Length: 248
Image (cartoon, rainbow, N blue to C red):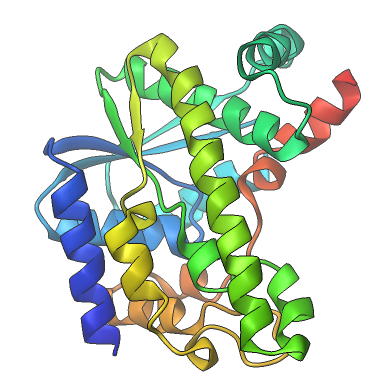
C-alpha cells in the first residue's frame, strides 16, 4: 500500500509541478519534509523556504531537520514592526474574518516574498495531507461516530482547504509566485480516499495519526525527528497566530 501511495504522490507532483527549479514551503514537519524529499529524489532543483518570527518553533526545527537533509535552505524572519500593516493589507484583499484563512494567507505572503527574493516563481506545499490522512484533532472526535463521520469531516476540510488556497494564491500573486498543492489534485484525492481509515487514525486517543504517511516518510529517508514529530500548524509554529491576535 505504501508503494502505491508513493507512486501516486510522485505522479501528482510530476503532473502538477512542471518547472524543475522550485521552492518548497518547509517547517521540518513530516508533511513538508516528505514532499521536499520526494521532489528532490524526482530530480527537482529544490530550495527549502521557512518563515516565522525570530526564534519561532518552525525556524528552529526546520534548521534542525535540514542539518540531516542538507538541502539548500533559506529563512525569512518576520519583522514585528511591519506585521500589523501587512496583516491588515492581506485581510483587505481576501475580505474574510476567518482567522485560519488570514493566518495562512499571511504565512504564504512571507513564503512568496522569500521565494521572489530568490527568483523562484513556483512554491510546492504539502497541503492536503492533514485533510486526507486524518492529521487534525477533529478526526479524533469524529472516529467514535464511525467512518461515515470521518468522511464527512474529510470532505468539509478538503472543500475549505481548496477554497483557502485560492485565497492564498490571490495574495502571493503580488510577488508573481504560484503556490502549488499537488496533493489537493482531484486525482490524488480520489486515490487517497481508497486508503483504509485504519492506516490513517487508530482511535480517539491517537495523538499522532497519519500513520501511513509517517511510515512512508521513514521509507524514503525522512529524518526520524521529523516523521515522529506531532503536528504543529504553520500559524502556530511560525508565531503568526500569536502575533495576529495581538493586532485584533
